[in-house]
Image 1 (tube, one colour):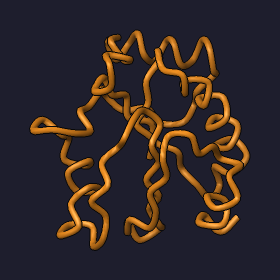
Image 2: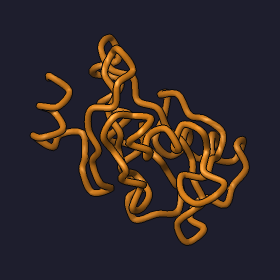
Image 3: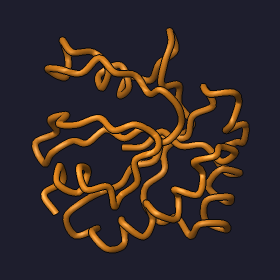
Image 4: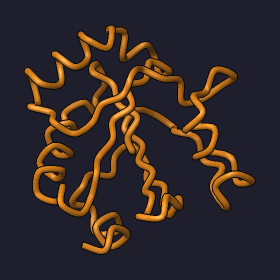
Length: 130
């Protein structure tokens, strides 16, 4: 799971994650959650975000409606991801756009990675069992 934004220094990661998704979609699903919580870097509507991602990066992995990933309006999935009483261990909220949360096939949260981590990061690759 990634919290994503179209006007961020990490936005080019869309290409990396799309390539990764295409290579491993038989075993791994990449989920994008647009978020405008960090300096207004995702101001678009769902339609505008989808068009931007498709046109500029050919994104085919599932993209969700724009959500909040921190604060009082935090989306339920991000409440679960950041509440150790719910997920078993993690309290780390996204620190910026393109933070990664890994879940296993049982739906258990296994890892958190910050925004600069790309799909070819050895620790991430190992965490995914690739």
